[in-house]
Every structure is written in C-alpha cells, then in structure tokens.
Image (cartoon, rainbow, N blue to C red):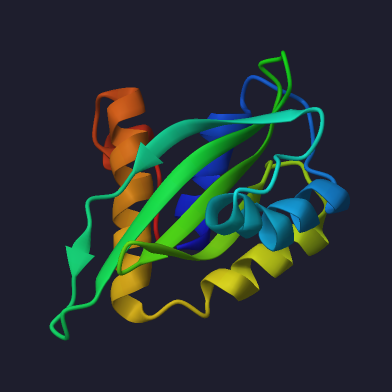
Amino acid sequence: MKKLLLLFTVFISIQTFSQTTAEEYTWVTKSYIRVLTEGADIKRGYEISDLISSPAQTSGWGNENQFTFKNFKKENSSEIKAVIIIHYFNKVAKTVYCIPLANSDKSLWQSFYSNIDLLAGNQKTLLLYCISNHIFRQNRRPLFRLGVKFN
C-alpha cells in the first residue's frame, strides 16, 4: 500500500519541486475538518480544488464509506502543496488525511502512514481502489505496464 501511495504522490508532485511543510500538514489534518463540518475559513493564502472521489461502499452492517481527494494549493498558483483525503462515514466527514509531497520531510510521511494504518480493512481497500483508479485514468494503461512492482 505504501508503494501505491508514494506512486500516487509522485504523479501529483511531478510538476513541482515543492514540499509540504509541517505547518501545512498540521493545518490539513487538524483544521480542514472544521472547514467541512463548521464552515470555517480555508487557510489564508491557499485554495482547495477537487481531484477524485471514490464510489460510496456499503458494508455488511449498512455503514457507508467514501473517500474524496482534493488538491491543497497555494492561492493563484498551480503549486500543489499536498493532497487532502477526506473519509466520509455514513455521508459525514469523519477524518481528514494529508498526503505530503514526495520530497517532504520523512516525519510527515511517517505520520501519514500511521494514520492510514488505523483504517479498517475494507476502508483501506476502498482507498487503494480510488488511488489506483486515478493513476490508471491518468496513464490510460494498467499499472503493470508502468513497471510498478508490488512486494
């Protein structure tokens, strides 16, 4: 899973040499949920745009999970600073994750992986489906033709 997430981030950050800062990472993971649930303002100097959404998946218990991905960018710029993942549970924003850019500090990646590891099995499967589907659509060919090796 970590390799697929890194591959996804490489596709996103290929056009920039930017890094996600600890301040940006913290704002996304701690404050963006308030934007969704309370209508709080977006961080000054930044904007958020849609990237992809997974199909809603209903579990055997009737619970619905969905993931939405958004670009976190500098305002009036194409400079992407991170990718936001919003986990909706029964149509309510439950958790926000931040995928740092590929060349960001290792501690941000460790924090991201630790947070993703807390997802239940079916939620991780849906998250990976969404990421791989986006990569496939961007390249118009299956992952195995890209030379990606999964261990």
